Length: 74
Image (cartoon, rainbow, N blue to C red):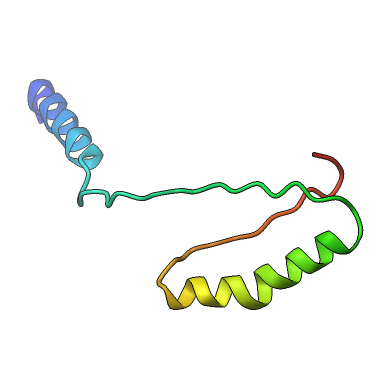
């Protein structure tokens, strides 16, 4: 195999592998912060989000969704 042919083939293979196969769909991300004090506020809010808000959001077609809390500090 000639060197020029080999370099041309490998360069074109690298360009073909880097090309995207499908167009990316647009996405919207939303971050919400809830600043709560310790005690019953945290428990009530976590209970509401997991038992009522998450199933209602899934019924409306909102997914994926996650809820996170600070374990050590803010």
